[in-house]
Image 1 (cartoon, rainbow, N blue to C red):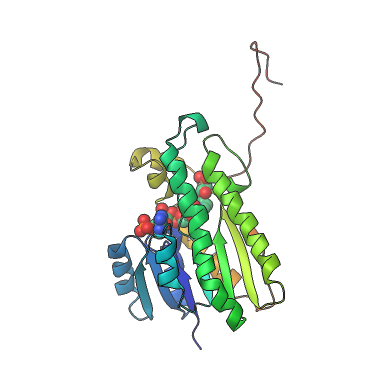
Image 2 (image 1 turned 30 degrees about the vertical axis):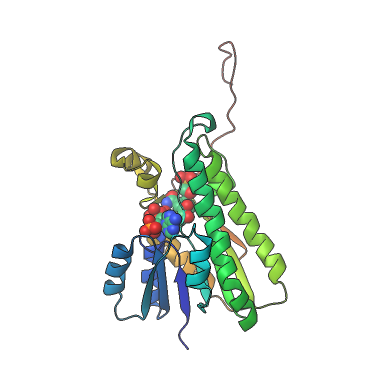
Length: 251
Ligand code: NDP
Ligand code: 8X3
């Protein structure tokens, strides 16, 4: 029987690439996002595949429960998310913090809660949560964005603890810098600044993440990838920052 994946945030980036990858693998797709026009185009592109589209804002608990509660996906890809701003904590727009928490934290909670009872009842399913390296490795300006992704990691691990004894899998994927619309959203449409994020480096591409999601979900049912971090070869960690007073020399 053909399997079904439900993807949040399928209108762009990782979500669109995952839709294409799973379509190629013969899966049925349920694609969600706010921009229904984008989803319609994708549905048209993938018309050989059974694809349903749903306009859904993951921040709205009732709407999520209504739209997803009766669906029976084999895989839920909790991918919808965003960063807004790169200012230090004291200079951010508090509304941006709210939006990130509502989307990246509450959206993941709501979508998971909507499909999980069915997965447990069927004793079958897989929840794949997209986090970020920002959830583990702090950087200036990452403040609430990174914290939301740390939530996603711990939520994923705690879900596994609850689901022990069932055949429902949970995986947490933490990508590093990837070239999607992510930075254009973070910088609120400033395309030039967004382009600089990826300039001169071989950033991850959406297709790379889609391939990893496909791999993780197509492993034998007894194999649960708990957490997986992936970066471009051109990205690594910096040393810990030290603020030196009185022009003290750097060693
Ligand atoms: P994109 O901006 O390209 O895609 C984000 C997707 O999320 C869009 O489809 C958007 O759809 C959807 N989305 C945003 N807000 C909502 C909402 N309230 N309700 C429903 N859907 C929403 O970025 P990416 O593909 O890069 O991001 C996908 C995920 O990967 C995010 O969770 C992001 O945090 C994470 N990530 C990204 C990295 C990167 O460097 N690109 C690295 C690590 C993690 P629409 O606007 O139509 O609703
Ligand atoms: C996106 C990666 O480093 O821009 O989650 O926060 S980063």
